[in-house]
Length: 136
Image (cartoon, rainbow, N blue to C red; front, side, top):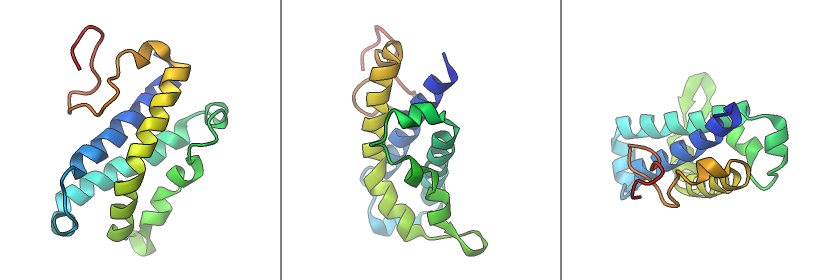
């Protein structure tokens, strides 16, 4: 697998993880659950790192993806002396991962059709993408 292929697959996997972590979570639980917040923040920060690692040429072919915003998430969420604005993380984590998942899947379908066949169209469990011939 090429490096770019792995990075785009990681975008899908991490976007799906954020959605799974937040499935059915209320704002009250979010505010009370430090482990949940840390897990979501970690995955969101990974999304920014992965987007930064993608070659400019690949990002350039997909201008509809909010690459600069994804890459800048850390600066938005983490401010003065590494304090975290959890309200910002909550809002972005609720809205953006489903969009990014679909955009990353579109990139996989266009750029890496073999890999696309191994990913189910909907979110997977922690086991990751389905393998060829395996039920989704």
